Length: 336
Figure 1 (cartoon, helix red, strand yellow):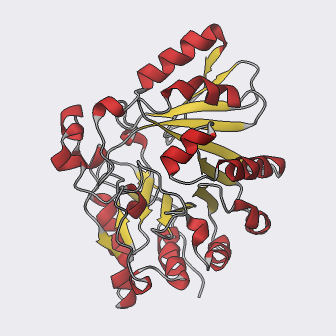
Figure 2 (cartoon, rainbow, N blue to C red):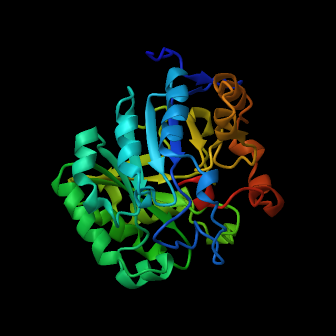
């Protein structure tokens, strides 16, 4: 039976339309990044409680029928799923733009599959250009492999963004190095303000703000720093250096949230829908699917109830309150 596709994306009560779904395929990861996974790890759910490949497809079809036209696959590390190829080929049959967020370790094994399915947009997480620091934050020694795979992706003309979580006392001294990394490489570096999630020991003084990052860039590059035009649904404030091949930006979720233009929804690996990254409210779509219940109204209800700003943490004081900001899953259990 043909799917009836909506011309209108999912609206919330603040008149935002949602056409972008981020699907976490797994809680497992082959790295152990400190800001993403608690030091003690997380209890992994049994396979039976996770979405199977056909269930990922069935739920995705529901979102597409309601107006979603972009799907990003996340994790954990999505490429550790043994049935990743099945999932991606299924999703490629839908009228959507496909993207993926990955740590880059396994991408060399999937380049042909990405090309086959038309997946062009790849966000690669790398928080240091120094091998020792990379090992410190990831608790693994895979820096050289990630860099080789980044070069491989660029050689094959994929659209690459590098996600860099900045933390005071760790990698703030690499801001200019990352910007200079765009001099000869057509990549978009995106500095991310350190955000609070369950178990990641967030403190406001560990975070580097948009203002601080821009100050460092202005001091280093002066009039060569160019502000780029940002679009309505952009998460980053974007810049480039005159004459450089690539660009860079700042995702300022903490100090300058971009909630007014939010068009994103999330689906966890165990089939729970989150209407906001910071929300502890979840809609159990997987259980409904397994009980043969229709999903459309559940999705619409969850979207409509979305808060205006950061799941109701609409002031800096609320956002810094551990009773609020830690009442959520860890980042790895949400999906990056």
